[in-house]
Image (cartoon, rainbow, N blue to C red):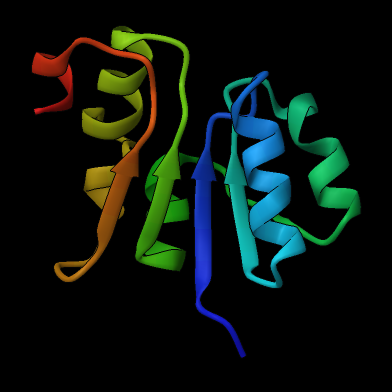
Length: 104
């Protein structure tokens, strides 16, 4: 049994990264603002989450790769964001190309 991993952001960089997580044998839960971008992963066994918050609550380990500072802010800090669902001992690793202040 492997730990479940959550992945937010399935664009040009996020999708191949998420596919590698799935290929490595992890239970993968995914969210993307455009749900259609998740179809290939869902067909390979990933599970859809209706929001970043729900994804974080299910997994406790979330990787994100989103398009810009605004997307990261909304996806991590928004009402339905990652941090709203992440357990106390949870981990969020962001790999987005954003300003350092946004990462902090």
